[in-house]
Length: 490
Image (tube, rainbow, N blue to C red; front, top):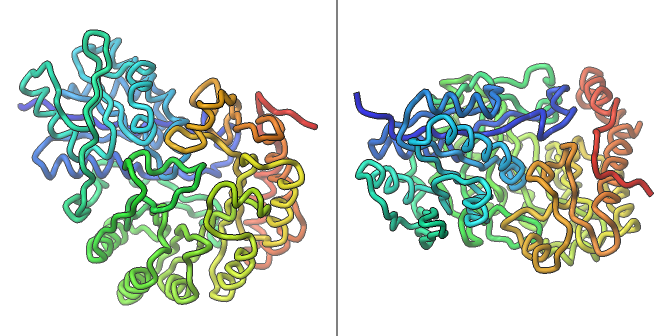
């Protein structure tokens, strides 16, 4: 029997990263796109692959390592990429522990870290987490060649995208070119995952809140052409650009998810979905023609979404649109190069509601120009819009973002641990602004969260649209407060 080529692991700990929110099952558990893509691609190339989702299985870091060692592969790749920009760095502590446990019990097995954070900080990842290798970039070019090199018992690895240590020195190779034709990448290896264990966000299922499974994700494009200073998503790709799958491939995968797993609730995980009107309309028409009964959510941008897009999206079952409104302050928005004005927000909200869609509004407290006055402007915007859901974040200087580079250059305070980059963890520490400490920003964010979700106007709207069960779930969510190490109340 031939030796297994690779085990891919998605790390994660709901309790450590989401604090008490994990008790209420508020958080989604999403399939690991990048690990599944790589597993599918490697199988297509003729390699043998196993994929473990430690988060979905609720494994400890030690158990994840034990499972990987038991499979006895040539290589274990811990893929530290989530389904949004914030989901990589906060998982680095766990990824490092998995690598450490493997090294302790089976030092002959080679280890690799890949994903967004390792791509942003490859040398630091090598030094701090001590894997044998770091993959910078997507991995489609790098991992097959590395497996071949391991089979040949090579000692030098002149493989694009690969970083490693030799004679106590970090050895780097240039990034490989990006995969231009995404249709060459097969469907993610969904069959290797526990698909029955994934669940949608609570808000995504407000009209059927007690049934959030089965759940799936779908990508139609990779990357983003914009340059928001707080975003790190393009660290994986090395440039600001967007690449598209063919619509036929997207529909083929959608049919597979619906037909094989009976999935209705789906997240389109594209960082920038509602960008090209012609493409969106064509895709929606293809979905409509198949008569699926779907509940989809997707990201949109204030200055790219159009009325025609929204009309077709609603007809296709895209019931929720997630906008990055970020701040209610003109000064703050202009500073982070969002590319639109606060004045445009009201028009987009009106247009979205006119088409019958729900809004997931995203806000960020603690952007560099934020002070108490500007954060109150943001809170007022939140209450005025009164969206069905609001993601209320603090600014984190994620590795790979311009903000992180500025933080390093200016010696700004950063979290002491990678878990401190989690929005909801005990150790969470936002970036300080020019006027406020990270602890002050954190306190205001937590205050704004309670103010929003306990607002009678909001709860009455939710009751009218979704019913009392959903109101009860929201009230349960706000019945306590998160434990915070760095909270500073003014």
